[in-house]
Image (cartoon, rainbow, N blue to C red; front, side, top):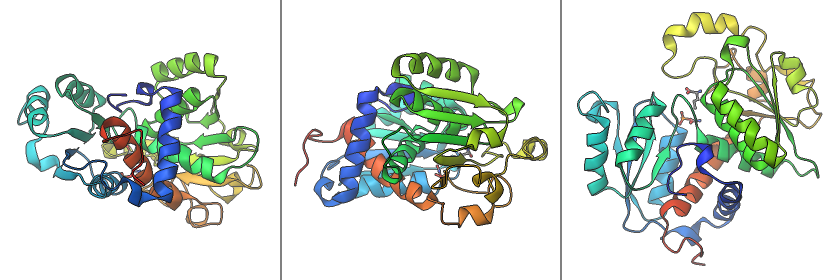
Length: 311
Ligand code: CP
Ligand code: NVA
């Protein structure tokens, strides 16, 4: 594992290692405080962020590394200077970067010219760190002998794309319902189905949210209007009528269902206040797990003595 740009950069074995390491870090964070000693990471964010930015900052600093935040005003990737030039300059200074971009192509171009670890902190195509934290959360909350059924209701965007790929890699079960025009990326789904053919994963694409959540162990949603899509707001809101995760919909899932949301949430749109604040909600465990997973990813990519814990 050299980079984490897509879930597809990871083998099932590597995903398992990241999730187990994240669980160990969560139990004993002090054992990892020197893993990034002397390393400095750039956090390049073209879009706002709470969880991704702060969990990476805290994760890096608590393992002895340093961070430099570069927001949209700092060098405007591809506007003030070509992405490939910025990448080649930063490669001379930094030990790795976390990038949050509008276009996924910005990250893949950056990676071609920056020969050190590049981590995708969300693009218009994928959100791999989010999906890893979600699966850690699912593992913590599901103890049954079967593979849990994850139902996703809403927009077929970056978050769903990464969840589908991760489910495929791990041989899990996912059912998603999206309105016709807002399906996940067709090429990615094709690839996920090929992977599923070998891993035994089950991937069901639906258009009826009620069918998707039926008996599900986890029900996940994401905003209908993602960052950068504000101009499409009116049309999108109309298209997602009937796709809200509310108590009525959740009532069709398993009795012990847990509700997931990557956050930020738009209450009253994709999810109700009642569900978000209700007893099924585990959204803040998900948010916490971003930190433990980011640390595990960083250690796997560039930690010192990464196979050993220091205590
Ligand atoms: N879930 C997530 O990525 O949150 P932020 O946009 O706040 O980083
Ligand atoms: N789909 C959302 C996820 C935010 C974490 C967005 O891209 O804005």
